[in-house]
Amino acid sequence: MLRTGCLVLVLSVFVILKPTSGLAMEGVFTLWPLVDYRTSEKEGYASLNILGPLINVDRMGPERELALRPLYSRRWLDPGDYVSSEFLYPVASKKKTSDQSLFQGLRLLNWDFPAHEEEEEEFQLFPFIFSGTDEEKGRYFAFFPFGGKIYNLFGRDEIRFTLFPLYAVTQKKDTTVTNVLWPFFARIRGENERGFKAWPLYGHSRKEGVYDKTMFLWPIFFRYDLGLDTANPLQRRTVFPFYLSDESPNYSSRIYLWPFFRHIEDRQKDYELWEFPWPIFRIARGSYREATTFLPFYANERLGKEKKRWYLWPLYKIEERQADGYERRRSRVLFFLYSNMEERLYIQGAEPKKRVALWPLFTYERIDGISHFYTLSLLEPILPEQDGIRRNWAPLWWIYQKQWKGSDSAESLLWNLYWRQKRGEDLAWELFPLFSYSREQSKGKDFRFIKGLLRYRSGPQGKTLNLLYLPWGIHWGGPESAIAEDDSQ
Image 1: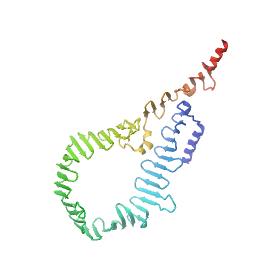
Image 2: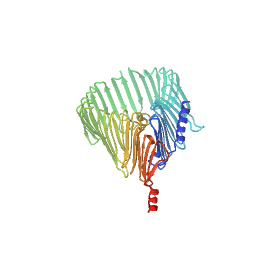
Image 3: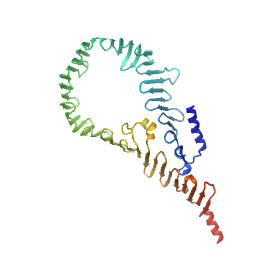
Image 4: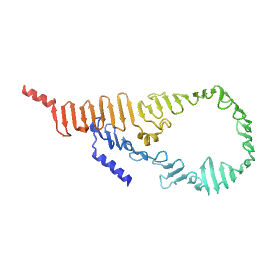
């Protein structure tokens, strides 16, 4: 009933309103805060807002949007080849294309509906239910922790279990691991591969010519030989926390009394690093990595083409990244309290990108040459570039916003209690319900007091004054007056 009632309300407003093109007041209907509707046939745009920001319907060409904030939003293309819905974002969402229909809830419930009858659906309610189809192995189903089997998930080709953690078997390529009372007992079998684990006392596994691993009194003693079938085999020795080492032809690492002293020599990337202790003191020198760190007072690090600097951590941080044809710089105060980001893409026609945010007061952005300022800004500085936040939540607290590019601009206060639009020389604004004004080069000026209780217009056809919402009024100074003067002469 609620959905039907909302639909009837939306449709009834569309029937009542008869929009026209252009910026003038005839293309805008407002009854704040109940209804706000504006349209531009030239741009293929229409927008309807009901109860301020709570209900919104937008159309831009083939794109459609519906929002019942913050409960529900929907975006789709006309025709409906693509549909995206969000429910109390980020709680749940659904996406539908011609090839797929996927529903997810809190990243725990995933339901992949079949697009065609011959396809099988996938269902996952993490961590309890897993159901789907593997192209080679067929159907699978698991109900955790009671039992079942799963294919191609969690980095394993196959998982089988019964009354987990009592019994479980995992398989990856030709390696099978059988667990009894996981993680305490395990047996490893594969081609030229054997192993056994009685955690935390002892464990050993070995694959001829590939690896040899031994663990004793976890996490104290480790002896690993890895990548024996590669050009860069690794030896790992650990007596935790006194001594940890990794040694290979390309890389060496030594840690003494973790986390106090560490030395790394990366011969492949050509740098050396010293830490004493991590992460307070750090020095790195080399072509790939450089660092001088003395936290919390100062840090200056470069890793490849990325740079970052801290001053009085976590007070002030600068991050920079440079790549071929790309440059990005971001400075922050107290993580997200204040942030200033600039981004450039050095290709023809690309506009620089900028974002300045001061939580919780405002955010300013310039994207594709269009500037946008809004306040308040409660989540955007913390979660920048999250479209779901902007669609479902942010309009609820944007008490003022302005958007502009060149001489064109639009601004709104208190969800269009006051609004102003400007396109070139054309202008329109309103302070509901007292005053409204529009100016168009082709039509002239139009001023209204209390939605037309008093209305004054001037333009090429002369001047007109209307009172008390009456359709007729006093007209003077137009072409008819000029003809009458000529006849009298």
